[in-house]
Length: 123
Image (tube, rainbow, N blue to C red; front, side, top):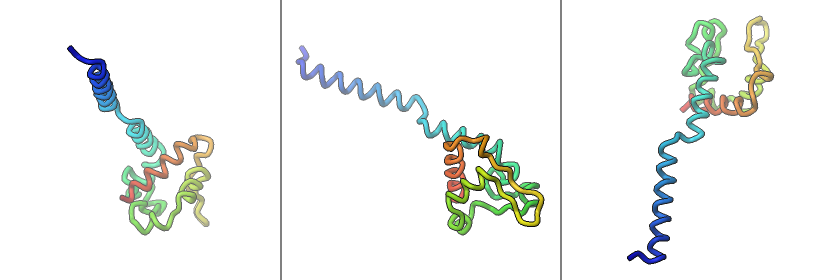
């Protein structure tokens, strides 16, 4: 015959196991966000910057877009500068082409996620 304290311990162990299984069965929210951010990058950015951020695309090479992956570039460009470029676009002196801004198209969370993705490209 089980004691009351034994049943309580068993209930706690079973509840903990059920919680662990639930966590393992469903992906964490950050994994879902990463998938969404990757899709966003591919839809809005990769045609010029490349899927890998190296700008080895026809547009990237034509516009002389810098490779975002080297440590030197990552160190030189601040998060605030990246956000401003994403929101307001990039215009180059003497060149008609540039990057359109996404201020009215992206949420602040999407912009932050893109900045984080760009940082990850440098790792």
